[in-house]
Length: 173
Image (tube, rainbow, N blue to C red; front, side, top):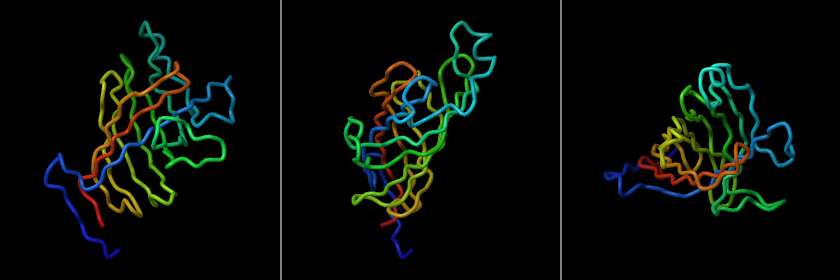
């Protein structure tokens, strides 16, 4: 690739950073499919509803193609988002709401081209939680770092917005 590897020597000085807003609109069988950006591929298991007072969605797998924006607002019709998050999450704890994410951020704009791959546990009871940036392509070739998530808005189980503060500590320039 002819790129030079840059590794940050301090967690206070990443080699690249950005903030994006992740918008997930779950299709629940009733809402408008035109606006939905995710859908449950499996239903929660009986373990999530029969053993616990409040269902936890344990075992439910959600596949998504969610818009990522630079600001908090969803893109208006006809406007392209800054990127798209494409992948899945599944609820993996019986006693409380936690999930595991695996997805790619797909950039196709004048600002960035390529992908960034994120994986990890989303411990929803924590105010902030980190996902690992484990690689990428294009502008983010072999990127390594952390994406810190925080819930920014929600409307029941149908919509949530996460603020994603991404800091890369290994970059190729």
